[in-house]
Length: 293
Image 1 (cartoon, rainbow, N blue to C red):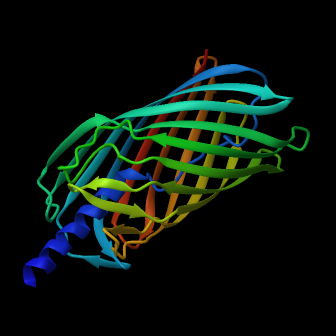
Image 2: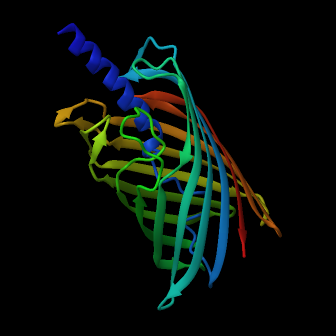
């Protein structure tokens, strides 16, 4: 009985660690991204993401833990904006190269993991655009394919080995001179992973995220913004056994943008305020370069 308890304890740690980088916990929208594009054009976006995890929490309570987790990713996105019967639309494809470091995780060997991430395809449509009032409403559909590096005999993988779909709706409006307000809601649905830790069946509940934020434009070149995110859901079961690890996450993100003749530069910093069932995210740093071609 003691052995079974210890094995279950280790398994819960593994599940928590896997959840750190599997869903990314939200489909984050960049400041001003809900604004509908004008005309037909292509863009490329290169991003660097660094995440550092801290203390482990279980049901909202801090647990003794000496683990250390760092996650690095380079993301490449290619986008195309166009019109469908005079309705603004856009589509993009995105993948990543990833590096994960972990130490002192119970039940998981210390080490690094490197590999290609899963590939996401996105289609967005703006059914309501009022450019005079600077009011935009858009919807988007996401499909993620299991193209990432995955080994069923490893506890930690870069790829998910699942298909994911998501739906998102976003609204942006100019509140007053130089201030924009945005809101978005999304839900992520995942297929089962039948090769989890060997041949176990891993299932996840739908994951919901609400985000809201304010953007202040100093001038046509520079702007800053602050965003708040709340994520709930995504609880796991393994071979039908509920793991009791529902996500309840509150986090914030600060952004600064500069628009230049060679492209747009974005710098972001954020962290989690509350994470009830995982390692809390202490630092998230993102740099983004976007240009038209």
